[in-house]
Length: 233
Image (cartoon, rainbow, N blue to C red):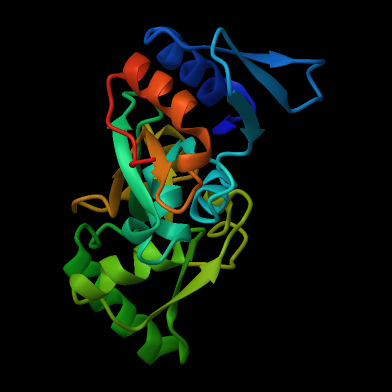
C-alpha cells in the first residue's frame, strides 16, 4: 500500500487536495470533522494518511509514509541531514512564508544583522546575560546567525505566540514565520533588513527509506498522474 501524507486541516489540506486534483488524483476526507481519516479515489493500492504538517517530516524519515506534503521550514528544522532521508519532488506553489528575524520597532538604530550583533554585545555588557531570541526554529536560526557573524545571543523556545514574548519580557527579539508581516507589525515589531533565514512553501516529498518495492504498481500509477519520478521500487 502506497501511503500519501497530507496536512489534516485548514488551508494546507484544502490546497493540497486541489493540487492533487489538478493532476488527476482525488483526495477526500472521510468521517466527521473530528476524524483524521481520508481516501484516494480511483487508484488501487493508494491510501491517504491525515497528519499534522509537523508530523509529516518524521513519518517520511521513518519510512512509514511514501509521499508527504509539508513546509520546507519543518523539514529543515526537524531533520538533520534531511537530504539523506527525503527527496524533494515538487514545490507546490502555496503555503509561502519567510522565516525572519524581528526586533522591537522602538529600536530605531537596529536595522541590520550587524546592528543586532552590536546591540547584543552591548546588552550582555549592561545586563550580564545574553540577548534572548524567541523561536520555534532553533536549528535554522542558530546556523543562520552563525553564518552572519552574530554572537552574544541565546535562543529561547517558543511554542505559542512568539510575537508576544517581547511584551511578556521573556525575549528581546524573535525569529518567526510570516507571510505578510502584519502580525509582527501589530505587535510593534520590525523585520531586519536582511535576507530571510528561510523562504518556505508547501512541498511534495518522498521517503527514501520507504518500502517502494512493496507498492510498485501503485507508485507507477501515482508517478504517471503526477508526472514526477519517484524513488525506484
